[in-house]
Amino acid sequence: MTDYVVEAPAIPTLPVKGSDARFPVRRIYCVGRNYAAHAVEMGGDPDKEPPFFFMKNPNNILDSGKTFPYPPRTSDLHFEIELVVALGKGGSDIPVDQALDYIYGYAVGIDMTRRDLQSEAKDMRRPWEVSKAFELSAPCSEIVPAAQIGHPTDGAIWLDVDGARRQTGDLNQLIWKVPEIIAHLSALFELAPGDLIMTGTPSGVGAVQKGETMHGHVAGVGDIQTPVA
Ligand code: MN
Image (tube, rainbow, N blue to C red; front, side, top):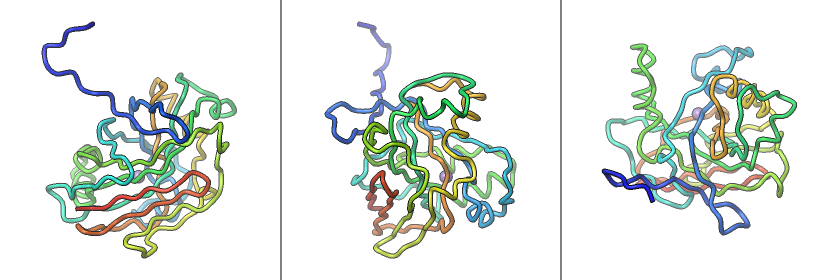
């Protein structure tokens, strides 16, 4: 047993469909602007520029069904519904045609964003952590093993707030497909089992208020329910 001089942090985990064992979360990578219509709504170019990445903290995970506390220092809290990829194997410089072999499963996540702080960071050319990597900013569903569902490449992705449809898209609109994302990311970082990749959000991002409930869905993967309090 290792002794620690302060309390050692717990490993963040997610439930796995059909298993009592849990998925340990090592890192959370996120892809920016990966649906053309969302790139346009954020003031970007829909043409296929190289993907860019940012990160959240592993302990920003929030299980589906748990209440998301409205965070401090923002008055423009946005939802971004995303397909989440969970890696079962790691490596560097992973070729596109082998990338699916590294995937353990998939989940439905919401990339919660303090949009006002992100806009300020962009304007001042500052980093994004305060807008993206804050407490419980990564609500995520259970992970569904690829062994059960295969590798989804098309199908609806949407998010409702209190029953009203706010975001809609289709996985086939991803600018950078999942294998390409893994190839790009693994050229920049050494990927490992336990890594999650949030693959980007379709258009329709917007603000959510205290007292509202977000319901996200990815066809073939599952659902997420997140009340905001
Ligand atoms: Mn996002």
